[in-house]
Length: 112
Image 1 (cartoon, helix red, strand yellow):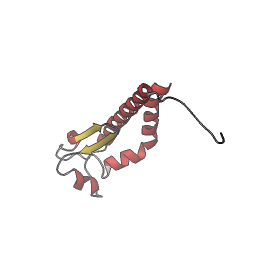
Image 2 (image 1 turned 135 degrees about the vertical axis):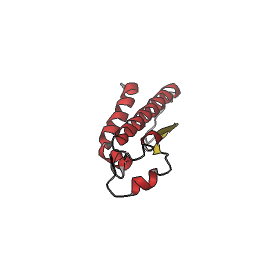
Image 3 (image 1 turned 30 degrees about the vertical axis):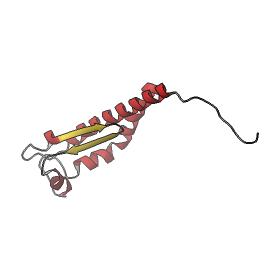
Image 4 (image 1 turned 90 degrees about the horizontal axis):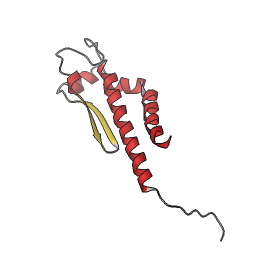
């Protein structure tokens, strides 16, 4: 027979463990992003910071602020008391490498 042939068995238990570690790492990364972003949240009424949330749904992690005025404050490019505009976006950009390393460490827990 010509060509290349590979035969093997898929390790379903190992694959699930790797997936679980990856998801846990993503969740930890989402938590860390929220902590970083909270350092820069504008403080006027005090409603924004406590509205920060991390939603973990399988392989998806969402970091959001749910206060009714979160989007307008985030997008308005003016000086904000106690924080700055684009606080969530900038936290993600500024610490992206660190978050990638954190996710990598989570996967290393499984792969050793």
